[in-house]
Length: 191
Image 1 (tube, rainbow, N blue to C red):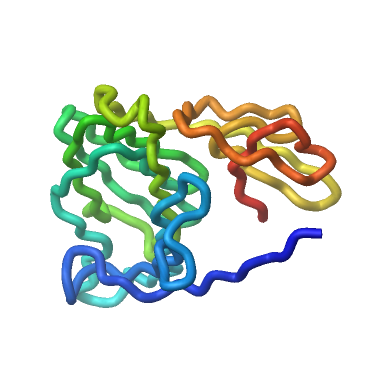
Image 2: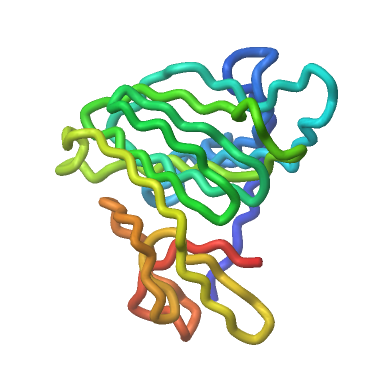
């Protein structure tokens, strides 16, 4: 039987000391990566109703050799990149940015927004063969949801219980151990 490793996140301010607060679980002192996952940031729930709270303001910055996976539980985030993409992401939707040989982007809370922001962003290292691929961006509004026994899972990337996400990952996932996902490679959220 395998053991479960609990990783505690640490507070990080994106964009400098007065930046937007996230909890960074990867990397940390105990573990640098989990498979190809090299960063895992969670934010919120963060109340944006206070006067003067601008929410997320992460200015233009570069990435290379990875994919960022952004998924929201609440709120909105506006993505802009050097490829000319401007895309607002909302709860239940997925933004997948493939940096490849290089991309620059920014993320911010739009001017018109909900009172709360809550989400996650995962950075996934691209395999060596794909590190220099052209950069790309994809937005997925409709993700499959699998329900069973009072639980539901949104399939972000890969296949789970026969449901396949439209999002394309270049990095192979780990095979599931649950009897319903043997032989599948799910990346899913459970709620």
